[in-house]
Image (tube, rainbow, N blue to C red):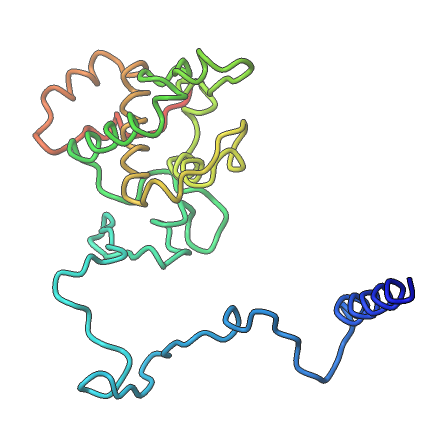
Length: 232
């Protein structure tokens, strides 16, 4: 019995010694149970390294390597990279403000709209439906779930930048329960989907004269009348 009490006392002392002072400050180094989680072998950029012939850790990109990011070209022909978070192309906002861009900052063509239609079919159709009327499979099959009708006047009046940010960050840029697709849809494809959505909305709102102008348009162009956000 004495051994049992002695064992329990030792156990209590161990528990108190290991956990009893959590959150307290000390000048001693922390106890590292798994030191490999904190201290891993690694090479910092440009650090000397005798393994490579040139003696440094940073090496040129191997031939054929796939780039992690590609720039997009805006309407003025300037390259914009994904890491430029505050650039209007990436943010969907007017530089230095919280105002949404009225129109897409990227050039719009038939090819861009076609790309947007393809991406829309992958990411948007399940909820919003092929017609954008909110009658996708999720709405029809899920109880209590309702996707927005993209032809709703409030959505039609949204600036292109707000539509872009809703695609990227979800319903916190508007209303509803939509999640953001920033990790699934890249910057250029988000703007392409916005361009296709404008064409989809215009298919219901455009006048006969505007539709005739679309038929006569030069290949690779889209009439400006069909790209403007319309009020209703």
